[in-house]
Structure formats: C-alpha cells, structure tokens
Image (cartoon, rainbow over all chains, first blue to last red; front, side, top):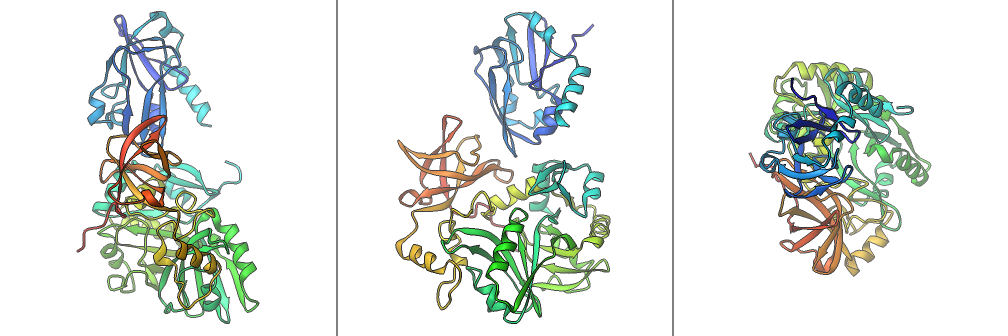
Length: 127
Length: 362
C-alpha cells in the first residue's frame, strides 16, 4: 500500500518515501496563487524546523512563503523549477514538487492533516 | 462580500470560470485561464476585458469645455467633437487627484475615472465647476468592455455599424456593435491597438455574449493581465505610480502638462516645479536575475537608497521582473545599474527606457 499524502495548515503537502519526505504545494494553494513564475529555494543541506520558511514562491500577482511542514534537512531540491516554474501549476502533486526532507522524526508526518480534513480546512479559510 | 458591487457582466464571469476578487469596491475577475496566457493572447491576437467598474461622469452646460479645461493639466478646450484625451487632474499643489480620459460629445463632456477615485473625483469636480455646468455620475448606467490586441480592430469592425478601422487613435464614434447602441473608442491600456466600448449596463451582457460567440480566438482577460500589460507598456496606475503625493512631472507625464497660454488648477505649482526641476522621476527598470521587485521595495546604489519601487511584477513578454520606480534625479538615468532590496536581499537591476514594450508597427 502506498503512503498517503498529508497536508499542513500552511498549504504544503508531504508524502513519505522510505526514510525521507517529499514536500510540495497543495492544489488549493496553487489555484490561489495563479501562474507561478519564480521560486527561491533553499540549498541542499539546510536544516529546517517545522514552520521555518523554506523559500519564496512568486506568482505574477504576488510573492508567498513556503513553510516547512515538518522539521528536517533538505536533501534534494527540484532543480527543474528553475527553468520551469510552471510545473508547480501544471502538476503540483507530481513534477511540481519542491524539496525532499530527511525528517528529524518521521512521526511528525502523522500529525499532519489527511486530504479530507485539509479540504475542509481550506474551504473554511477561503470563505 | 457585503457591500461589494457587481458589474452587469458578473454572471458572465462566473460562467466563464473567472477567479473573482474585490477591487475598488467591486467584485472583479482577476483571471480566467491564467494571467500569463491571457497576457500573451492580447499581445498575439486579442482579448476582452470587463472594465465596468470604471466611473463615468458627464458634464453639461454652457462653457463646459472651458470648465473642464480648468480641471485638467492637459489641454481640453481644443478637443474636437469625437475626440478623446488623457489627462491628470491635480490639486493646487500639483498632486494628482486622478488620471482620466476626457471625451468630447456635441453638447457634453464625459470623464472616465478610476473606480477607486470615483466619489472623490465627483466631489472635487462639483466643487470646482461654475454654476452653468452640471455634473452627473452615470457610472452605474454605463458598462465598459475593452477589446485589445492586434486582431481587435478588424474583429470589432466586422460587427460594427461604424467605420472603426479608419477611426484615429484617441477618437470615438457613436454607433452600434451587433446592433446594440454603443460608443466605440480607439483607446486602451495595454500597449496594443484596440477599442473600448461604452454600452448601457442593461445591454452589456448581450453584447459580451455576442462578441464571445463571434470569435473562437477572443480570450477573456482579467485585471491581473491588465496590470502586466499596462506595466510593460509603461502606463501609470493610480495608487501605485501616481498619487496625491506625486505630480505629473515627476511621473514622466510632462507631455500631459500644457502650461503655455493657460491656467488650470495646479498650473502655478507645476510651473514652479518645471522651473526648479523635479527631485525624483518615475523610471522603468528590469531585473537582471529572476527575482521580482514588488511595490515599496527600496532601490539601492552602493550604500545609498536612491528610490522606491512603485509598480513591480513579472513580465510575461520578457519572462523577467520589471517595474517602475521613483528614483532621485541624480540617479535617474537610463542604463544605470542599480539594486533592489527584495526582502533583505540585494538583486541587480537596470534602469531602462520607457516603455519596455512597444507594439510592432504594422
């Protein structure tokens, strides 16, 4: 059985991949942002605490921050986004991933929301 | 969204899947398919905008032209019937109350004002007008649909009762499009050729639907792309680039300030500023890296702060950050390398000639 995607209140998704965790931006957040045109991403090796700013995500309209949904070390950054930031819009859950973290505690992932809960949370936030 | 108004085209936007946002007291479409795609459609073919939030104020009475002239930095008294002109409207200090379009009809003058300034403008204008001239705010009765892009004029021509193709820039005609009475104006805010169509609010949805049905290539364009289009074209946005704290001379709108042989509200202050020289100037810039400067970011040169970003966004045409910034006079030269402080990090930029985008001449 595949791992289930979890979501943070700051609109990132996390999915466990073995001992690491891939992080991206939720479909809801991407819809809100509109066309993504530039991302300022961290260097591999950076240590992040839960809630730290991972980087900036620029849409045509505005800049937003990406936050670390769990604590961990950045072990990979999606280099594709440098040339193709639109991947975040086109495939937010796939090719538009942002970073891979080596979590301090894999159990942190289990504290995040399931999709159904997140969808309710996002709908309320929008209202 | 309590107290937020809707244009006559609200249902059309929802049906087209627009993302709606509050803007200047109205619920307006910010985008339909995406800002970048909409922007490119206008540059390469054509797009249609709902600008019904814009305000329209009609002036009428004896000496209406001279009375209007006294309110505007640009000369209006020499407008022919069927002609339109862009002008700032200033306080005595030279600070800009609003920037607007002035249309001369046979017995009336129509002012098209920014939605956010509509009430302020109306109050100001009424207070300045002589007894013989009356002002009416007809904004709620008038809808405004813009069609902009290289294919726009031919498209509208194919549906119009009047000669749109031979209509000169900044001129307008009263006629009909798809049989619906309207005023067709060869004006716009995108840097492209095109028209703006004023139509009675109650016929606006019918016109919008008819225009959509008449073309497979007409993109719907929201306020998001309107902003990127106008900024590439070097056109000022009230509230960002021009405010009551800036003058037309500082904003690079000297061409709209006609000081010789006329007196208007603000002319003394603007004459003094012209004689003394401005202390800062609105200049266009482009980023050298992928970063995007946003309004209020500081412009730096070495250890000095030399200015502040007024408008900044991503340019879909050039695929990089662009903008306009107020820069101190001694640093305000085209070609100068500067830096922008974006959230504490310095990013290289260069001052460039306005406009960044100029449409290819046919």
